[in-house]
Image (cartoon, rainbow, N blue to C red; front, top):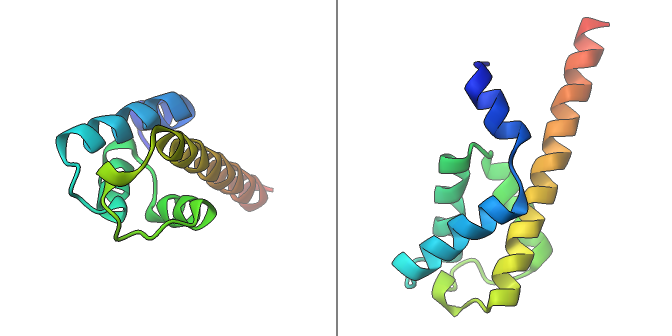
Length: 101
């Protein structure tokens, strides 16, 4: 894993995800939530598992267009994605420690 990727992983936060979601909502309002979230996962370095977990927590129809989400729902999605990412990162670190032990 290269250092810049690791830095990006350790500095991810819900504000950055919120900004990306808001930009996508403005630029591509008709795009599905799932499509938008997967795009953000690619650009932000998250796995699709993070997207799936966050969308399950939010309990919205993933075929709904991103433009139909309220500001509150977009914020909740960003927070859920960041939380899922933190859990995934902690699990990876824990797994690595167990490998080296």
